[in-house]
Amino acid sequence: MGRVGTVLRVVAVAVGTSLVVITLASAIKTVVLPRATPSVVTRWVFLAVQNLFRLLARPSMSLATRDRRLAWYSPLGLVATLAAWLTLTLGGFTLMFWGVEHVSLRAAFVESGSALLTLGLTRPGSLPGVSLAFVEAGIGLFLLALLITYLPSIYAAFSRRELGVTALEIRAGSPPSGQTLIWRFWALQRMEHLNGVWVEWERWFVDVEETHTSLPAVAFFRSPQADHHWVTAAGAVLDGAALAVSTVDIERDVQAEFCLRAGYLCLRRIADFYNFAHDADPRPDDPISITRSEWDEAVAALQEAGVPLKADRDQAWRDFSGWRVNYDAVLLALANLTSAPPAPWSSDRSGARPMRPRLFGGSMELPPDAR
Image (cartoon, rainbow, N blue to C red):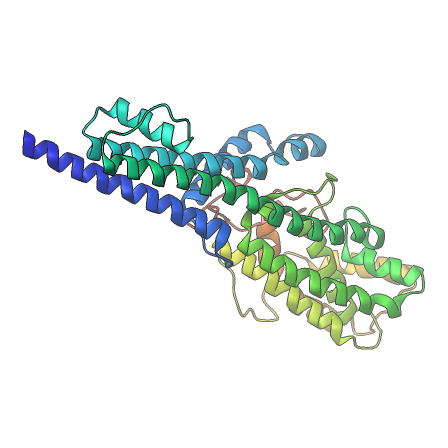
């Protein structure tokens, strides 16, 4: 029995050490490492919170009610992540105290909790135990400070993103659409100023790509207005640029093409982080979620408003489809993943949405409203 007890305590120390290492690795991947590296712990925490919000924010609810509830999703996910880190640390050091101090599990739990929360309720009797208490107290403070310093980065990225999303309503309406963007610039006789939009949004896409992969929780922070959303705003700008280069009869604007490339690369790389399957090199004639009749209707509205359009409509449709195919699947996938509010040609076509992945990596599953 003595030998068995010794083996069990050695195993407990090894398991406890592994739990603490996993926790620290998760914290560093999530907060410190400046690249898109999924964390298993963060993934499962956000999955658990996601399952809760599937019950609390059903698609059948009104837009305002559902948006108010979904606004809590990412903040609660972050708090739950900290709680998971602290819990794993508490459990890991409980096992280590039990293995090193030769005390009961209850006493080991009290020693671990006292050290983690720096309460000073108990004092380990051996030097290894005191050393463990020092290390655990340092880790607890480290995890708490790490999340606190993480929040300013998240809110800075959120603020930059929302500045562009909110400003887009002035140009593209609410909910935003590429057709409205083109029409409004034509109606105000500012078509030559579209170039500035493409320059501005190329930078926006570059910033969003970097922040929404290195700080993945930002993708689920919702706009202050229920009808605003970063995915639908991205779709509207990309559709506007695609219409401008394919359908509107104006001088070629290479900056619009740069904006399109920046946009679909941004959406693809965010989708890659969540393991969405998509064609990295689609053919120009591959199918898209926009039908020819929908495009014809939008073109007819632009023509009625007096917007100059290219004479060869068949070629214009092929050109538009050839641009849209680069971002069509990932746009719909991200709209579904983030529960974006209804907007033309993006979140309004749930039947065309691809499968939903598990957050922060993992296998795919169908969303509840597609089953």
